[in-house]
Image 1 (spheres, helix red, strand yellow):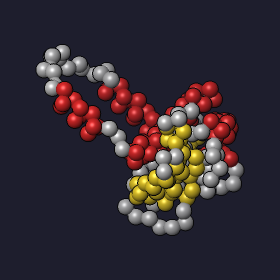
Image 2: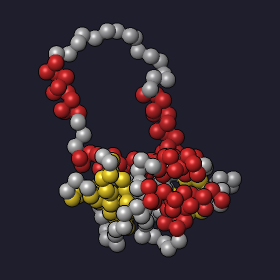
Image 3: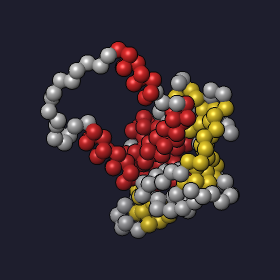
Amino acid sequence: MEEGRVVAGRGGRLGRQVAALLPGVPAALLLVVLAAVLAGCGPRAANVPLPAKPGHARQVDAKASAPTERDQVVAAYEGYWRATSAALASRDPAKARAIMAGYVPGGAIPALVRGLKAIWRRDEVGYGSPVFHILSVKITGHAAAAVHDCVDLSHTGFQNQQTGQVVGGFGESHDFMITTLVRQHGRWLVTGAIPVVQTCAY
């Protein structure tokens, strides 16, 4: 697959290609609420000093919590979906570019933003969010990876912002999708998504 090109196998036009990879806005809103809670917007715990950990305990904790390469690939894959949701919800090209910069190669961003603009012109918003059922992660060397996911897209799609009418769905409950990633400057970036005509189960 050509580097810097994010594509989907459904539909021929750019708008549909981008739409096939965009999750719904509610998932992004949920993440914002969750982040606010975790950041301490709720009641604060009492400020009680804890005894310092021995040096060797800190080293063991650091090793145990270090994410594996597979963890990093999965985080980048799932983060891409959340980022596209946030970019769609932003309704602002500059914000969308900034959001997507950490999840796709630079060469893919202009096409993604053009697709988003087409959706905004139709006054459409996303709804729902994908449910991941990752079957496997294949890593080739240190620069390429592929995530095989039996993703549930049955409750995701687009609706008219004014009327609330659903105007299109993203997929089915058992969509076998292979998403490719490359490692650039220490980050895993999504380069493509290919729907596979094959049944999958979870």
